[in-house]
Image (tube, rainbow, N blue to C red; front, side, top):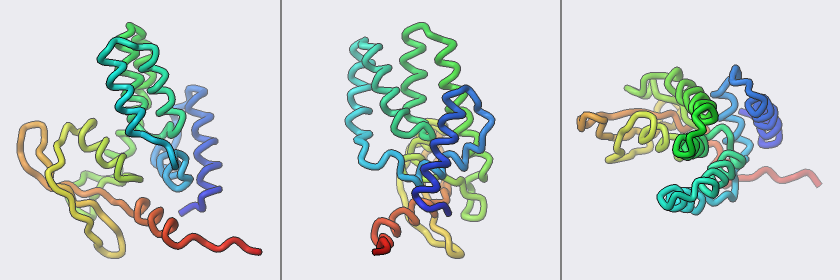
Length: 195
């Protein structure tokens, strides 16, 4: 996996392409570069999320759109900001712009769906961070997480989730979490810079 500086450069190159309207990129690599580059490190997602929800509910659409953009600016490869932007743009009647955000959301979701079917460790969906796992499970699949277990199989880390699907049925789904485990290891054991 890429070092942080290499990943950050890859992320910025992908971001430039997406901003220019090119969605024909390797979305898995874009998401991975964002995670390994730690592009949103230190960003307070929770506060922005809460403020967006409050502003949307109060009809402060311009403010909510600015918050969605702040979310996107901190990690364009993560779906939450795009979902926020799509939601508020639809409320504002800016349907074409909303469709652009939906296209990005669909590309992110497709890159996860194409990584497996989530039914076992061998066919686990590949996500790059716990937040992406939760977002994909709840927003894309409409599942409600009831339990989580970190499992190691054949040298890989997995989140084994017990979820209620949209029909209310309980099932187990698997997500490969190697990237998150690598980032935790890097944080716990940073390389000493040469003197």
